[in-house]
Amino acid sequence: MSGRDTSAGSPYAPHTDAETAAMLDAVGADSLDDLFDVPESVRFDGEFGIDEQSEAAVRRELRRMLGSNRDLTEFLGRGHYDHYVPSLVDHLSLRSEFLTSYTQYQPEITQGFLQALFEYQSMLVELTGLDIVNASMYDHATALAEAALLASRVRATSGNRVLVPDYLLENRRSVLANYADGPGLAVETYATDDGNVDVDALADALDEDAVMVYAENPTTLGTVEENLATVGRLADDHDALFCLGSDPVALSLLQEPASVGADVVVGDAATLGLPTSYGMGLGLFATREEFVRQVPGRLVGAAEDADGNRTYTLTLQTREQHIRRERATSNICTNQAWVALRAAIHAAYLGPSGLVDLAEDCVTLARDLAERLDAITGVKAPVHDRHHFREFVAHTDQPAAPIVDDLEREGFAVHQVGEHEVQVCVTDTNEHAVDEFVASFEEVSR
Image (cartoon, rainbow, N blue to C red; front, side):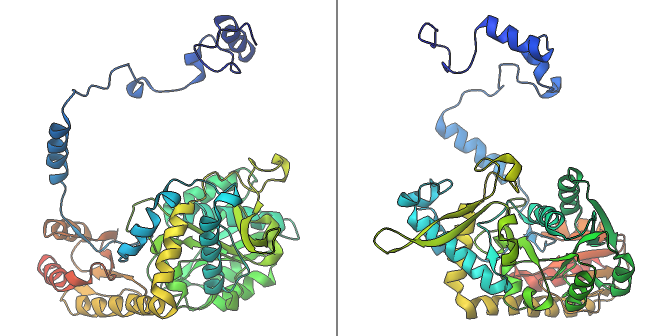
C-alpha cells in the first residue's frame, strides 16, 4: 500500500483504472454506469440549473414560494395525529448534546440520553402492561411488519398466514407485505362489522396456519374496538400471536393490551412529541419478556458501574450490524432515538393525569363534533355506531368529492374515504376552528 497514490481517495478502496477494470470484469459489467439503473430523466448531468443569488434574494424567493401555500385548517387523521407539543419539548430536545447524538454506543458519554430512552421504554411498559419495549422503530408500519416476523420465528408450529382487518391502511399493508415476502408469509384480510372486528369472520379465518392476528384500538376509522378480549382468546386458541395497534395517548384511556391477551403492541408513539409530520413517525414496539431476544432494534437497560452507581447501557442490540448476521432479528438502522426522546419529554410533561385528560378530550371532541355534523340535513355522523377516538366517518347524501373540494376552498381539509363518506379528525390543535368548520360543512352539503 505504501507505493500507491492515495491523493484521489481512500488507500483501502481500489480506484486505479486497472483495479476498476478488474472488478467490472469480475461482475460482468462494461462500465461503472452499468452498475446503476438510474433513469435518464433523473440522472444528474453536472448542472443544478439554479442561478446564484445573494442570501437576501434567496430569502425573498423562499418567502414568495411559501406564501403560495394554501392556509388550511386540517381535520385530517387516518394515522397522522396532531396534538399540541409544549415548547418545553423543543427547548430540551434541541440542546446540542441531544440533537447531535446518534446511536448511544458509548455509555460512558451518553448516560443522559440513555436514561431518557430507558424512561421512554418504562412509560410504554406501564401503558401497554407488557414487559419489554424497545428503543423505537421507524413508524407504525415497520413495527407491524417486525411483529409479523417475530411471530413467524416464535410460533411453536408451522404456519405462514398473517391476518389483518379490512380497514388496515394501504401503506401499512404494503410495508407488511414487503417484509413478509422474504420469509414466505401470506398477508390475508378478515372482515369487520360496523368498524369493529367481526369475530365470527375472524373465527372462520383462523386455523393452525395462522401465525399472527392483528387488530387496532382505536381503529383507522376512529372506532374503539369492543372485541379485544375475544380476539386475544381466538388467537391464543390457535397458537397465533395477537398483535394490537395503538398509540400512547389512546393507551392511557382504552383497555390495557396485556389485559386482553396482546402478545405484541405496535403503533406510532409520535402522537406525543411531534406535530403532524406526514410520514415522519416513531414506531412503538412492545412485547412479552419471553420474546425479549426476538425483539428487533435495541433495548436500553439499567446496570451498575464499578462503584455501584446506577447506569444505563444498550443491553440488547439485535440488528445485523452489531451481531452475526445469522443471529440477527432485524436490519433496522435508525432507531428514531431523538423522536423517542421528544415523546418521553412530552409524556413526562403531561404526567399520568394530563395524559388521561388529553385522551378523554379525544373522545369528547369527536363525539361532540359528530353530533353537530349529524344535525346537518343530508349528513349522518358517525357512520359507525361505536365510541370514537379523535376521528369518525360521516356519510353525506351529496357526493363526497365536491364536498371535500368545497371545504378546501373554505379553508378546511378532510379525508374522502368513499363516494359518499368523509373522515373527520378533531384534536386539541384544531378544536378552536370547530364552529367555523361546522358552518362551512353545512354550507357545502346543501
